[in-house]
Length: 540
Image (cartoon, one colour):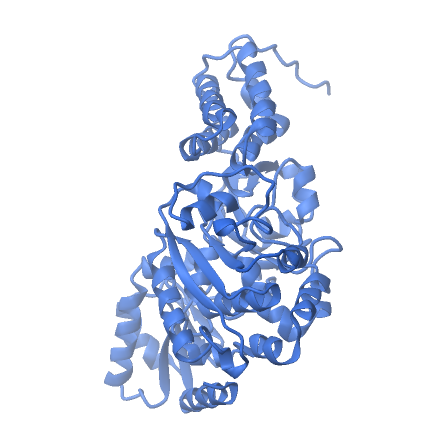
C-alpha cells in the first residue's frame, strides 16, 4: 500500500465520523476498564439505538483521559463536556442530555488546572483516538513523520534533527537521544537492532503502560524512524507480561501496520525494510536495565552485564543495539513533523520538551499528566494534583521510582528537570511521583522501598544482593525502636558502599530513598534510636 492509498483510507474513515453530530469518548484504558467502562460503553451503545439517535451520536472507545481519580470518564464532543464516575445505569440520562443541558451531578470541570496546565506532546492522542483504529491514528497526523523521513531525509539528517531538538532519554538516565542514535549509526555491524524498553516496574508508575494502551501506533512509528536513522531493519518491543491490555493493542497494531505496508518489506514503496516483534518480560524489575533486558530477549535469565562494552557497540546478540523507552519513542514523530526548533522551545536550557508523570499516593488528582520541563514541584503537587487528600499537610514527594529520593516541602519550588532533581538527591526516573502527607513515616517509606529493591535484586553482584538485605534489616530494626547509633552509622556506610560498588543502576541507586530521608528527615530516625542524643529545642 502506498502513502496516497493510506490517505484515502483515512479520508473515508474521517468522512464516516463527520456524519455524526456528536461523539462520546469512553475511556477504555486499564484504570477505567477496572471500573467496568466496557459495560458503560456497551450501555451507551444500546441506549443510543433505543432512543433512535444512532444516526447522530457516535460511541467511541478511547485511551486514557488522564484523571484516573474521577474514572470512569466519558467526554462529549463537540460540547466539550466531561463526565466523571459514570455508571452503566447513567446511560439513558446521559444520551438524553446530548445537545441539551449537561448533567450537573456527573460533570467534571474540564477547565480545572489538572487539564489546563498540561502541555501534551506524548499524550496528544490519548483519550482522543481509538487506539485499535489505524484510521484514527492516520487522521491524527499518524505516519506523516515516517513518510517524510523515508522520502525527504537521509539517515544523518534524521539524527541531526533529533540531536538539535535536545530530546533526552525519558527512561531515567536522561542521556541525549540524538547522541545515542549517532553512536549506533556509526557502529560497524552486519545487523543492528532497535529495542523499545516497555518494562515499567516502578511502584506507582503507569506512564508507559498508558501510552502503549492509548497510542500504540505512535511507538511503532517512532521505532521505525529510529531503525531508518541508525541503519537497522529489525526491532523488539519488550513489555512486561503484567500489561495484558497494552500487549493486546500492540499485537493488533503490529498486524494492521504489516497489513498496510507500514512494517515489513518495502515500507510505503520506499525500499526500506523494518520488522518488529514483541517480547514479554516475566516481571523482574532488573530487566528494565538495558543489558538485563537484552539478556532476557536472548532467552537468558535477565541479569546485568558489565559496561563497557555498551549496547550501542556490542548489544543484542553481540550486535550494535539502540535502546530507548516508550516515552522517548513517542516524542520522535512529533519532532519530525514539527521540527527540532519547535520541540526545543519547550522546557529549559538543559531539559527540553515535556515529561509525562504518574501522580499517585496521597494526592487528590491521581492520574497521568504531561507538563513542560522546568515546571515546579509545587505546581504539579498543589495546582495540577490538587494538593493532598483529606486534611493532611504535604510532607514529601518521592520521584524516580523505588530508587529515587524523597523531596521535602521546603523544595517544592524547585524546577523539575534532570539536574535540579539530582542536586536534591533524587532522580527524574521514568516519571513516577508519589505524594506523601504528614501521616507518613519516612523511616517506613525508606524501609518499603528497600524491601522492594532487596526482593528485586538479581543477586549477580554481592554489594546489591547482600547490601540491600543488610540495609533492609537495619531499617527494620530502626522502625521497631531496637537500633542504636552504631546501627545508624553502619547504615550510612552501607549506603555508600552499595551505591559505589554495585554492578548496575538498581544497586547503584537503591540507597537513594535512605540517603534522602536521612538528609531531610533525620530527626525521624533519631526518634526511634535507643541511644540517640537528645535534641534541644531551638531557642525562641
